[in-house]
Amino acid sequence: MWVALALISAVLLGLYDVLKKLSLNGNAVLPVLFLSTITAAVTVAPFVFGSAFFPDFFQSIQMYVPPVSAHEHLLIFIKSVIVVGSWIFAFYAMKNLPITIISPIRATGPIWTLIGAILIFHEHLNLLQWTGVAITLVFFYLLSTAGKLEGINFKRNVWIFCIITATLLGAASGLFDKYLLRRIDRLAVQAWFSFYQVVVMLPAIALFRWRNPRQERPPFEWRWSIPLIAIFLLFADYMYFYALSIPDSMISIVSALRRGGVLVAFSVGAILFREHNIKRKGIYLLGILLGILIISYGSR
Image 1: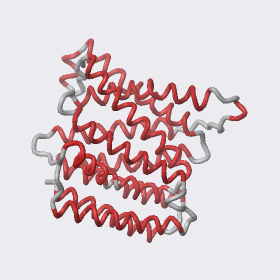
Image 2 (image 1 turned 90 degrees about the vertical axis):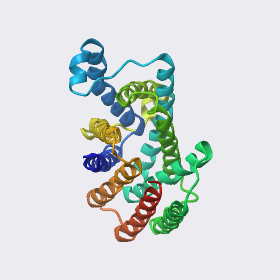
Image 3 (image 1 turned 45 degrees about the vertical axis):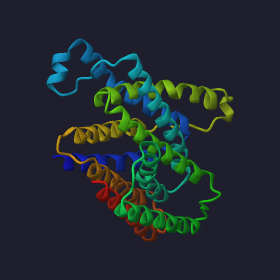
């Protein structure tokens, strides 16, 4: 069952990326992100308040959000700061780069998580993991050559810097999740994170959006894909955490399967947005995923 849940999570994550691209094309970034975070908070609110007043019912449907301490709230807030930072960089990159460039870069996330685990948790890589890292980095370099064919210089393009920064922050969040989920209930983390992401977004909106005169602000257009960004991510994360909660599940396999969501984003995005050099970039993406799969297999 946990394999099926991981695959569902992967598909939802891929569609989540496509919805981001649909929402951001020719649109203001911060309002899109802010409205999607509000959608997430509104969606989880009934479960948080319902768990407080009708705990037995929400326990019976396995949607009970337990109370958390002040220290645990602080930890979840720190996670929110990291993730919202990652999202801001990722959303700006998504607006300005082809999704067929972004998807392979995002697929390298497990490498940075692995490097972080080495530095923070003093983990050691075996031969298979080193092989996977080498394969992934080789195909990442080849991806940069495909980008040059579209006038995207990986060394000088600010949006490449943004998506790499977003990926590194995402890896940091993954490492922090490893710490959090050993101490705090998974639904409590997901629910309170959804509230705190709105709190973290408010200063960004005030600083970079509302302080500018209306005529100087990037134009914003409402699209129905905007609230769907949050809905798809909530369901993807729920399936992911549910899969990990099953006793015989293997986190290395679940993570590898979930990373396959980039194939959905790449394929659907290539068709919807009619991007270029699809065959070449598709081969490099498969190479990156092969490296990630080898890393995951070596981590069992």
